[in-house]
Image (cartoon, rainbow, N blue to C red):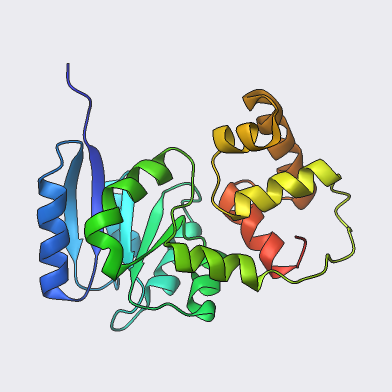
Length: 212
């Protein structure tokens, strides 16, 4: 029996781009577009009704922005992968999207080349970003560490930093020469110490409070 396609919802106010992305998704048998919308005014009811596996979210839409929509989604679903699609390449929008709970971030000019890679990466536990976006996020981190009020160990800080770069658990294990299970154990302790429940929340808190 064939694998069940990944259910995708697309929010994009540019009609031509929305149709173009929908066409790309239609060509990929592992994906199924179950909803396509030009605004996010009813995002909560749409997501709850259709139960998607993945969202593509434009950042700049009429009425309610994509960032505000992500914040709303995170009030009832902390795990749903959300990839932001945007023309913006500036620091504030990047950090706003990450702090809101976005799972990945992709510039629209890279969509044709990077869309499916981003899907694979986010569904594997990573945080896909355009190269320029990743550089901005890393650059935005304060040059000095805040007081370690959460009692993170040096190794936990290293792993939290790796998570903030979008690295998957498997990649972190390879990077630090430790086992997959050891990384998972460290991540569990990081979540407990930071009082969070997901990678998105941990990274968001780390950036906001200059923990890393």
